[in-house]
Length: 489
Image (cartoon, rainbow, N blue to C red):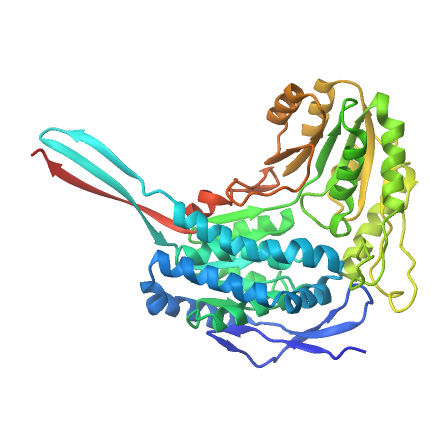
């Protein structure tokens, strides 16, 4: 049996004594594999105080070029430590090693380099205003916002953390991170590596713990936090908005989704099946961009449904460290029960189960892990709960549609609007439908292709604000206009 690893908080450049703590369980086996610090209000206050002090120290006098060089140095250090980071991420999440090694941790590292380059290439804005006797030159200057509170999710822990930390650092801020209680290891590892690369003490702090009434709530309500960035469920985002209103302070919220896929009869059927299967089952369906509503045009519905069911049955659950494993577990016992409860709801609503529909029985040593079956349903109206509520599990409901206007209207009839996919070989249709869908990102004939320069965020209850590229730089900066009158020569 693996030893229970302590996971302390990291404040002011030091690892704190463990103090109050809680058990973290391996999702694949259900066994405890870490003892994680539970930060109280005093420790959160100490982290915010350390961050504020760091802004008054050497970090506050760094140049943009120095901060860019730091991100690039940290990226190289992480790249050299890839195997260690992967092991920590798997211990927390149970993700299959192939995707963790090949995609997610490399993308987390790539975020650092991408925002270094985005900052390097950001143009300086200057505007000239004609005036009597001369002109006014308006120059836009960037200043750090100050102390940033980052509340990070458990589904893509390091990837989404560096997506926020990289632009916050390159803009000169200090940071207090509260990672999910389900995935604490790589946040601590990032802080350790940043210190090893020369980041001054207090610039990057990590406080562990739970959300409501605990470390997360203490952080977002702290008056010394100048802005909050959060990725997670919509109800938590609403609570963060209420807390951030005292001040008021800016928030960036990337929240939940109930994402549609529109499968037209003229699609490349094999590509659409493979792409939709990936968009449903990646990370056991625990991705905010996951497809949970699949609309299939009538002429190909039966063939598409059969192909998607076959793809679901071909997934291989098992040891997350084995290269043949393609399906991991749910993150926790609570999440597993939530997913299974919604599976039961679908059954009660009269759904036709095409495949799956329950718990996934696994052999030892994974018998007590948090496994659920990849599941497909059909036959329910769009008003059914399973067609409206985000499950965050490896599942989707398949519906038939007949024409373009109908399916666009049905896809848009949701309180969420994070992402959508369109599968069609008709280029004009792709452009037309893509423009009409009420989603922050629309993928056509692909899924989860991300360019860090492009804006990312959601419509409706899927979020507020946009991150990515210049939008991230703007969120993590205070923009000031310096207006200087220049008399005519």
